[in-house]
Length: 359
Image 1 (cartoon, one colour):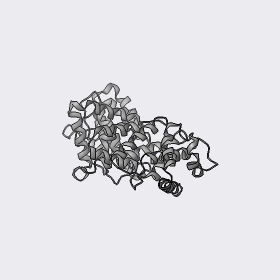
Image 2 (cartoon, one colour):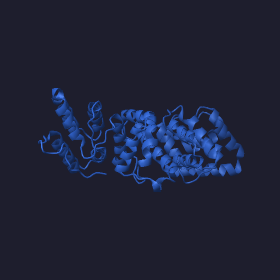
Image 3 (cartoon, helix red, strand yellow):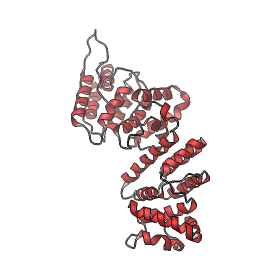
Image 4 (cartoon, one colour):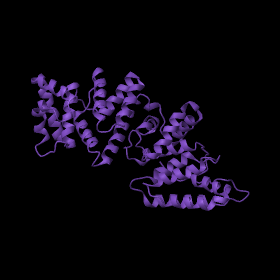
């Protein structure tokens, strides 16, 4: 569709030069239900195609892109989210970030008013955007009923683009490794003024990792710019952040399964139940392991038993890969099983020092 969308934007750029009345009509079409203003049919329908239904997502995306272009005719090679992130950086205004998060949470009825407000802000500071890409993005958004995954991926991509641009002046000074991320989470947990942030992180566990817009601001600064939205290292950071917010007890050197081992030894009356949950966790797939981990962390929540959050992050990066490395995942599961069933002698330390490789 990109060549077709490019042809449409080229047409709008030419139209702006020769027919200002048409551009005014497109701008005013925002007062109508999308795709229902007959005064602008002559400018869009030839590109929409006669075989498309009136509610076809691509057709509606063309109408919305035309209305937005008429409001702010600055077509430039930067995505909407990147442009809005750059505006956030330059204005240093948290309300812009809040507008963006609210936009990501919008449904099909809310998205267009919120998007128009955002484009008006871009226009005020002369930030252009790529309308060709926006047409594709809007078509994905409007196809939510038929394919929810497309919108979820789009929100993650927009979140990544926004925060990459918003924080670009800090990127060279920020460490994004596992140690720096866990240090940051520990700082959040220590500072009681961050209670709302920790609560948002806990609530994010009700979403697939990396898909809750409410916590993008907390985690995206620690995402490597080269990682895609689906990268397991990115998703592992979101999952760990939510789990750590449940039980912020970082204990270097004690793997998560070793912490469950200690829990079972301290609660002998329920040791069989803890073991059953651990076995279920050990057999979990990349798509279900987050739920099992949440249940396990819930059991640790009321104890002082800590776990190595850095190592857990590395382990999660292996476990939740969409296309897992079977041999590596098997080794990880075997390591967790040894950790859980390990019985320390009286003269041995209470945690195992061996670490597995991770991202």
